[in-house]
Image (tube, rainbow over all chains, first blue to last red; front, side):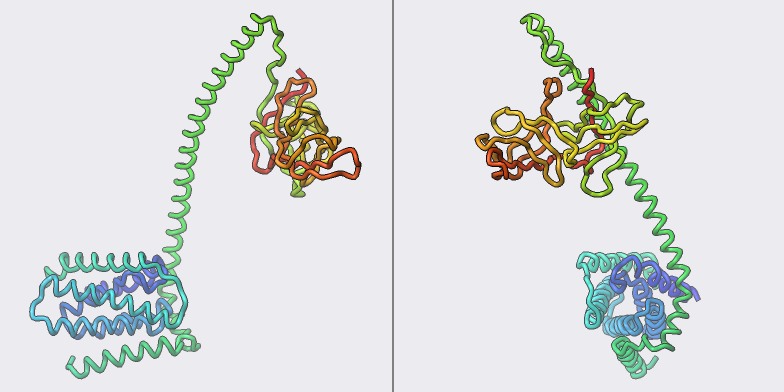
Length: 149
Length: 267
C-alpha cells in the first residue's frame, strides 16, 4: 500500500512536473524508474509487473504510447538479470548498475524518438538530468533502502 | 514468478511497446479516447503547475525590472553628479573668460544661451519623420523659430506653438530651411530640408565640396553655436550650369531622441 502510493506519486510527478520542465519530455529525470529499480532491488522479479503498469500509465499520461512501456520494462528486466548474478549486495552493486541502466534507458529513448521524430536535444540537459537521477539514487539508497535491508 | 514466465513476459512487453510506438496505434480513435480519459486525471495538475509557473515568471520579471531600475537610478545619479561638476567647471571657465574679456577690454561676443529641456511626445505617423511634437508651448514661452537640438545635432525648428505642445519641423521637412556651412571653407549656404535627403542651395561650381563633409547650422547673428545638420551624401552637377547639386543626409533620427533642448531665439 505504501509502495503503491509512492509509485502513484512518482508517476504523477513524472508526467506533470518533470516531463513538462524538461524538453523533450523523455529526457527528464526518470523518477518512476528510480522507484521501480528500488522495488526490484528489494523484492525481485515481481517488480516487472509494476514496471509494466508504470510504463503503460506513463505512456497514456504523456501520449507516447509504447515508448515508456518498452524502456521501463527493459531497464527493470536488465537490472534484475544483473542483480541475480551479483553475489554481494552493497551500495555499489545497487548504484552502479542503476546509474548505467538509467543512462541506457535515456539513450534508448533518445534513439527510439529519433527514429520517428526530428528534434533538438542539448547534451547539457541530457547529462544534467542523468546526474540528477544519480543523486536521487544515492539519496534513496542511503535514506531508505539501506535501512530496509 | 518463474524463470520462463518472467523472461517471456519481459520480452513480450518490450516487443509490444516497440510495436505500439512505431505502429502509431495512439492515433486510432478508441486508443485516443483512452489517452484522453487518462489525461483528464493529470490535466488539473498540469494546469495548476502552469498557473504557478506563470505567476512565478511574472513575479520574477517584476523583480528583475525593479533591480534594473535601481541600477539605472544609481547610474543616472552618478552621471548627474558628474554633470553638476562639469557645470561648475564650465561656470568657472565662463567667469574667467568674462574677467579676461574685461581685462583685455574686449566685449564678450556671445551671451549665455537661454534654453530649456523638454521631451518629444509624438512622432510623425507617416514614417517620414517630417515633424515631432514636443512638450511645452505657450505655457513655457516657446515661440515659432526656436531651435530644437540634442547635444550636437539639430532636431528641428518650432513651427507652431499651441497651449502646452509645440510642433517642430525636422531637417527632413521641406519647410525647414536654415543658414548652413559645409566643407573646408566657412562659406554660408542655405540648407533646405527634404526626405530622405535635404539639399544645400547655391553651391557654386568652383566651391570645394565632397561626400562626407559635415554640414552645420549657423546662426546669422553668431549667438547660437553651430549644430550639425548632417553630412553631404551626393555632389553632382546641377541643372543650372553655375551651381552644384549637393544632397545632405540629416544626422538626426527623431525616433531615437527623447529629451531635447529648446534654444530661444529671443533674449
